[in-house]
Image 1: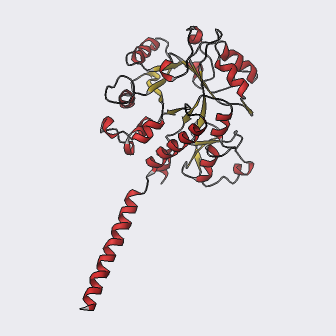
Image 2: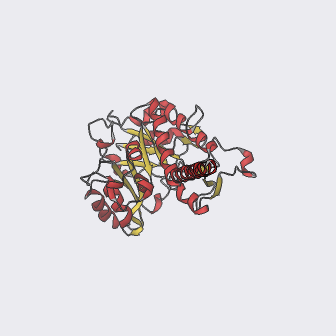
Image 3: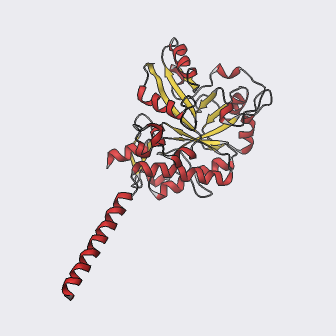
Length: 327
């Protein structure tokens, strides 16, 4: 009798342990979850310093859904991620050189944007690239039809190195939130400017409602005074100033890059980012990489906060797909 009870107890214990292990394995966060949590935690960190700090996710609209599964529509929204993000930015949705609508991505963006009635609306920003100026009117219509913010790049501005003249229309009001933005500038390359002062003066001479820029001009980090100079338009009204930060790739020209990495890179640095010299995809899950991005006074995000930017555009969030493919 004792032996039977003992066997029964042992069996129950085994089943319990197996069940617990299975549950733990099932609940372990996948790569999509980990990128979503990375963004959520980063947003929370920034808003501890500035509760109105703006988070824009670039080319990561699928992350607004549980397991990046968009088939369930807004019913499958990842609420914590969705609430942590203020805007979604996407490149080449309507035009990637030639006019061709990416129907899949456009549908996702419309689900998240102001035209969709059942979602908590987010600002949607689209940057299209075109070789034929005649496509401009078509792209403009596709953006205006659903109240999308748009930035158009022509052949000589593929790398976001120019300031288009579209920003010369001034409106007499301060822009202090995304819902007031009418047109924006994305300027990520400094190659056309002799120094940061020239770049800042040229940006300040425009009337764009929102400016997205790299927080560094070569090795020079923009100061609070620089950001404040950019913030005001020629007529004295305010605009939003957003810093671009890559959270899914490491760049060998950044302050955090160590010389030893040129020959012996850490294991979280993965393959080169194609057509982007000096840039490498990273395993964003690594704690060392995450500490470079946020969480301490020397982190990239803290430098952006200290410089007085209104928010950050998180670039290369699609690194989760690169990591998934490499495993």
